Length: 114
Image (tube, rainbow, N blue to C red; front, top):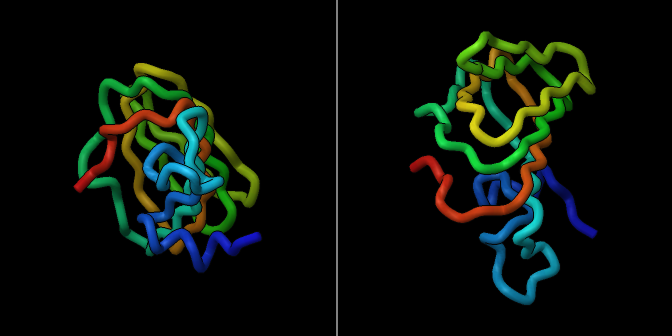
């Protein structure tokens, strides 16, 4: 048992994925899970490109804008979600203080934004 709100800040929000230590039950090459807390106005520094994963992002609270080449999607009501697949470039903006849950699969090294 754990608490996403307390544990997530220890690893940039990530609770499960390839980046957790071998032997840790949260280590996985199949899936990544992130509890993202974002203050109003925070945005992704650079677009994610050449994506090889599928992602599902669910709004827990707040208002969150996903930017895609074909247009933006705004998540405004708790439970709103968006799903995108490999090859979909994206970025995001927290329009208000926001909490989102992201699930991505598979878990592939090399996507961290510094």
